[in-house]
Amino acid sequence: GDSVTQMEGPVTLSEEAFLTINCTYTATGYPSLFWYVQYPGEGLQLLLKATKADDKGSNKGFEATYRKETTSFHLEKGSVQVSDSAVYFCALFPLEGNNRLAFGKGNQVVVIP
Amino acid sequence: ETGVTQSPTHLIKTRGQQVTLRCSSQSGHNTVSWYQQALGQGPQFIFQYYREEENGRGNFPPRFSGLQFPNYSSELNVNALELDDSALYLCASSPYGRDQESQYFGPGTRLLVL
Image 1: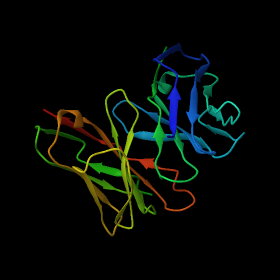
Image 2 (image 1 turned 90 degrees about the vertical axis):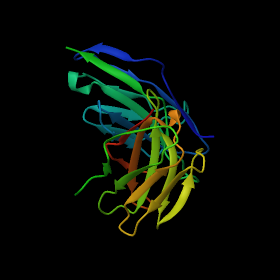
Image 3 (image 1 turned 45 degrees about the horizontal axis):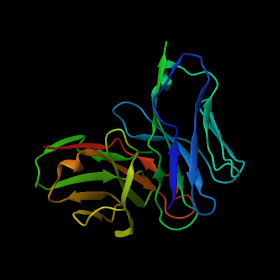
Image 4 (image 1 turned 30 degrees about the horizontal axis):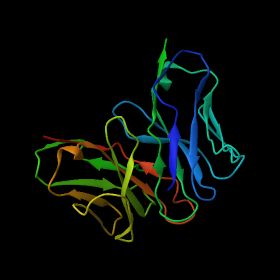
């Protein structure tokens, strides 16, 4: 079935550092891909999305490119701030079928001043 | 534009009890999906409602049931609560059709089963 895999473990980095969170997927066909962010004690917020191969989603300085050849959708930000500390989830929505988002396990990002 | 709202924010129940969680969808959205997020995990799809009918279900037992009302709001009911039902329950709304993949989440209801 459709699934998303995120890199293991929390990510801790200093303010203004470069952030990368890896995400790979398994799906039939070409799903739409998403990054959601969850701040402490809150629900999920849609951060960015891409709906077809080579599309780049971007928002608030974050970017991710839909790579069909590597089935990946890695999240990047050039210079993180303390306010970026949150849990980040990669997700896919299949092209056909079950109308549901499939999420990865999430990555805790902690930005230290 | 009003976002997705959920109630209550927190709830404590004991094993065997029943619980009802509520969700109001974002204005203009007619589809509601429910997800369960266990601690430290990603959300897992429970089911989706469209036009007051269940429109897809994840791997959850029948004691998880739902309703959707004519105003598109929704309820999630869980009977015979188990300890493993302790989780954050998220509701998401979306427009049906081409953009249904863009799901907008509420703040969630945190359920603790003792």
